[in-house]
View 1 (cartoon, rainbow, N blue to C red):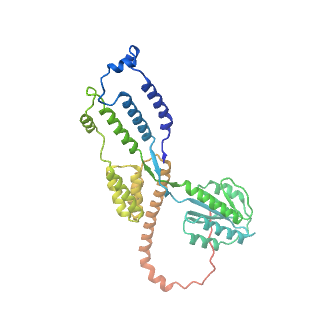
View 2: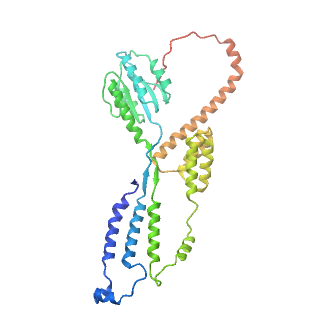
View 3: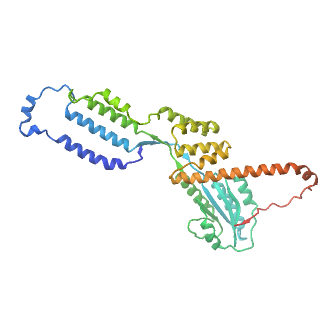
Length: 381
C-alpha cells in the first residue's frame, strides 16, 4: 500500500497530536478550587461515555480522516502498458566492414521489436529508409537489401539533422564507435545487450499502473466513530441522528456516483481489452452522459478508432480538453493517426474508382517484367 499525497501525513499528523495533547491534558476550571477527591464525591454517576473517552474517539477519527486525505492506494501488480516507444536507427553505409554493420543492425532490430522503429542510413548524407513501423519482417528485409556506399561517412550530418529529431531512443550502427550526446552506439554484440537493457528501462518508465483506492475505508470508519462520540453525549447535549440525516439529505451534492458507475466503467474497459470496441464505445458514451471527463472522452475516442470509425474518433479527440502533459502527448499522436487514416481511406477509394476503368487493359498490354535484384530504395532526408 502507498499514498498518493503523503504530504498530508507529514503536515497534519504532528499538528493534530499536539492539539489533542493540550486538549486531553487540560484540567477543568473547577479543579483550581476543589480537589479531585471532593469532585469525585460530588459528581453524579455517568450514564454515558466520559469526556476523555469521547475526545479519544475524536482523535482517532481525525487521524483516520487525515489518512483518507492522503489517499491510500494499492498498486496493481499487473502494469498497463502505455504508448509504443519511438526508436530511430541510423546505419553506416560505408564499404568498410559493411557486412558486420548489417549483421549488428539486424541484431539490434530484433532486440527492440514491438516498438515504432524509424530506419535511416547515412554516408555523407542522411537517408530515410522507412518511416515509423512495428513490422519487424519488413524492416529486416530492408536492412538485408541495403547496399553499401562508396562515399565516406560524415558525422556532422548526424549532429546537424539526426540530433534534432524527437525520439525516445536514437541508435547508431557503426564499426567505429564515437560519442554523440543523446545517441547510443552499437559497434559490437555487447552493445546490443546495452540497447536492450535501455529499452527495458524506457518501457518501465512509459507504463501506467492501476491504482485501487482505499480512502473510503478510513473515511467510513471515522464517520462511525464520530457518530458514536456524538450519540454518547448527555441528553441535554445529544444530537438527534434523524436531524443529522435530514440535514445531509438537504445537501445539494450529486449522489448519482456509486458502485454501479464503477462497475459500468470496468465493464467498458474489459470490453475494450477483449476486442469488443463497438460495445466499449457505447458503454463509454453512456458513462460520459453521467460523468463527463477528459479521460472518458479519450477512452471513447480510442474505442471509435479501433472500431474503424475514424471521423468520429477525430471528433472526440479534438474535444478532449486537459492540462495533463502525458495525456496531451498521447492525444496529439492518436489525433494524427486518425487524420492519417481518414486521408488514406479517401486516397484508396479514389484509386479504386480510377483502377476499375483501366484494370482490364493493363492486364492485356503490360509485359511481364524481368526479375531484377532487389535493393532498398533510399530517400534523402
